[in-house]
Image 1 (spheres, rainbow, N blue to C red):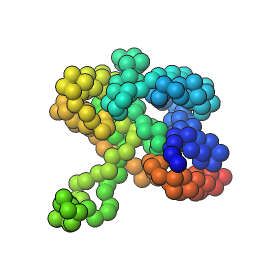
Image 2: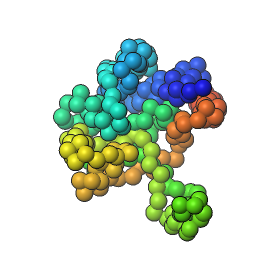
Image 3: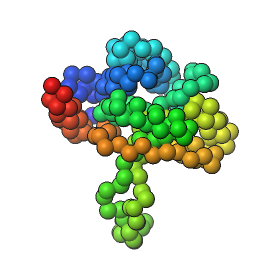
Length: 214
């Protein structure tokens, strides 16, 4: 059975709803462009509007690859200002984290939410055997949101498309231009929903936060 992680319910609302609602609670966020499959545009529009706290919502069709979908979203935005690109499968992001990452992006032109790698990291060979250790001292696990000046991220994606490259995140696109990206260290849970088991953990975290804020 398939698992649609963005529409899977957490505490009575879909994963996507929680992601949009969290960003909408950040005062600096002015509106949303959501990229989705063609067959889901109407459904996602209704869902996004219900979560966006009255802020503007535009839902557009994505492409066959991530970089094409991001490019489709960027094409709808004005040239000035900053854009926060967020993986909708990360419903635990907080308004405070978004604001902190944005402040860093305004200082440097680009910033990404991230956390230092805490696990021991090993290198493996083609046979599935350990072939060595990797020093984790300077390693960071990238998260989202990743926030950039609009001009910079447009330039980065124009270069990606022109060169026929593929990137797995926006930081990689900006790195190709030789530009630096600041790391915003996130101390909050920012789990990416990947497997059905992640739903239960996300619900526990949200419930714990709600209890703490009472």
